[in-house]
Image (tube, rainbow, N blue to C red; front, side, top):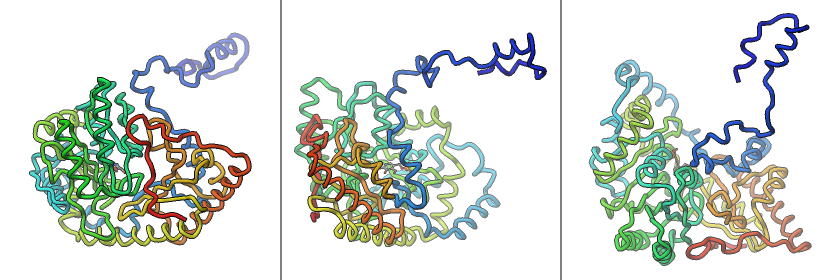
Length: 460
Ligand SMILES: Cc1ncc(COP(=O)(O)O)c(C=O)c1O
């Protein structure tokens, strides 16, 4: 730490040398982290993913990365955004660069209500709290509702960033099975009953109804109604996370769950996928009492969400055809989705199945029995293709027979090439498996309901 700072420079002989040697930082033990005994218990759940190191390699240009979920903002009209921001500084810079309201600026909250109308939500700007992306919304919602040991129900699989938040707040995650129509209502009912019988406090259901990350599937309208009915019977809060809802390829968006139940659903939205993630603006729409707690939590976390970003997005929405821009994004992602599906159909070995997303960024792949996506990632990266192993999306080690592939970022040609390389790796692994008969580690370890059974919408 600061020991060496007091040693004057000079001849390192005699007493000087001794002093310098004594003052040199001494390695006192072999632990990498000398602070390990000081951390709060909740930080023990905060661990770097074992696959992080591989991803620095995966980001090299020669690797086709089907791993990252970064929005592709190449089609954003930078001239329009640039002139909007320039004008904002000239016209309103003193307000836009000042502290603001903990709840978020009125102009953006009004605009957010307009955006939500596209998914059937009628809301008042007073009930919207602006957040630093919907990631912070997840943090605030968990902060105000969950004590250590409380249970959060999540789909199986679920968004890795949400699982990280739940872990950081020392919640238990109970995964509930899903299929190609989204969360399975029967499994949900069983999970709630089993947890309550076990004396657990279930705080909320966390669900991503549209173009699920990572499963790529969408909850049908009937399922939404049924899940809300179950939530009502069980007096359960629903947290609806909807960053991809406006990025559907074929049909108009389905009504948000929040549009069907304003009292039971806390809704999370984001501009990260429909505009740009760098502004870090998301929001929570919550019943009035919950909103008050959220604002207090937001004030203690950040004082206020970034004011300049809020003004910038409000100005962009006011001055630009943002609906047309979302349509451009949708077409671009659809082309990539199609390339991914073509590549998978052409290159995956027999026994591999995958979901067919109607929007969003992700395809969820189920490997033939015996293959382990986590174990084979180094081989895949060596073959210059990367993906995220399914285990990242479960809190309980399940998922090694699955992987998430993202089609949002690479060009269609690169996506096809990525699936070709992946197909070769899978063929090789299947050959090794046939010879040596290795068995995948997870077969049905989700502790509640069925283990996630991939939809198998397509099969080679
Ligand atoms: C399901 C889901 N929720 C929340 C987020 C967080 O997004 P942001 O904080 O950029 O709004 C993401 C990002 O990928 C996501 O996929």
